[in-house]
Length: 126
Image (tube, rainbow, N blue to C red; front, side):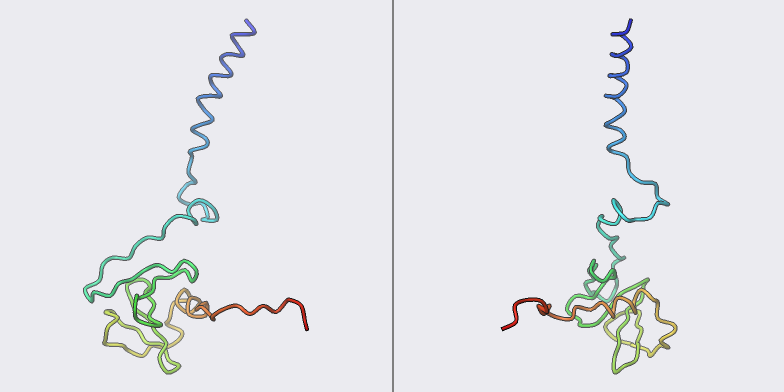
């Protein structure tokens, strides 16, 4: 009798553990683990023909081959001569925008632009 109970427990464990290991977090869970490591969603193709890729370091889409142009929520953004400009096509028709109207995601991504090679501040002083 005891052997049958142990066998039943073993089989139940063997059936349940693989399902628990393959479980994914619910859609409302914060993306600190599984979903944070997944590929970012691709934006919808645009008529302008500009290629857009996701820059995971800055957390935003950027235009390929066009320096300083960011893409967020259907609009292209750039900072030109100290002012923010917005465009629907990205290759022209730039309009000056008030800085307060620029999404925080875009402003933060601009701040995170790559500063260049890191300098080693620690080391042996000669």
